[in-house]
Length: 356
Image (cartoon, rainbow, N blue to C red; front, top):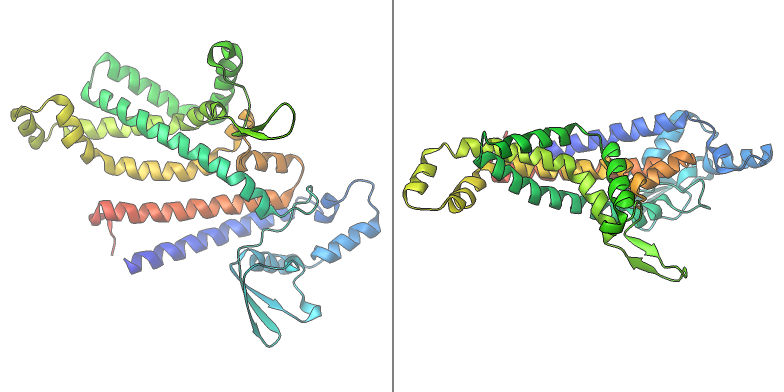
């Protein structure tokens, strides 16, 4: 197990390093960061001061090393003014160890500050919006598991029937529809055309300001449409997996023995057959949860859901590059962590999958 942990951990770190490298160099060529932080009427003197303050005038390779130093949990700082890390001038909340002129800082990754929000930390912006994305993803995957298992059992048990063909068709359709297209259709139909019957809104977040602008109120109804739209693909995948697995399991000899003992169809399916079809479902569900954190971008934006995805789109529109870079890194980190946990879960469920 230790060997698996080391192998998965090193692979995850290399993946994150690759993501950080691509993100840095991709956004480093978009323009002058100093100009992005200032308005169009700013003088050349102001632009030069911003460049010097944040180190934008340094060579690209040096900026890249400072960037890695900022996002690393263990960073190195030199107290010599000539080699001061411009990007890390803000105080860290963490542990510091001084070795001569060198300071080792054990800290949370520093994701810089927003260009457009008066120096607000990117980590603060993500902290405010990530819980909403997490709630949306968790609601979607929970809905997908409940509906997917139920519909998959029906399709597998009634193999070849009209119901089976109907469910297979719509699960295939659900896997092929892009999320942004489904979001537009569902938002318009249930939030506009049928709004008088559904009571739902086309857009809205988990918490909304009241008419007097005095307090935020919980609006769970705004969760229904984006959660269902985001869960369409996982529902389709789970239906197909459960159907395929159940068809194979129902042909086994111990299932025939269970029927011979007088057990009802419901008892046979849910006590004996279903549990032996869940291995691929658990793996798929865990993977889909990680994908939802990244795939919620367009769904959140279309439904006006205040999550990390909506923040990414807004930041791209306003060239708030640090917010985009920070959000991508956080999502990539969560994706890697969840996938590592999925690998261990799969080994626990099926020890034969352990490569060591």
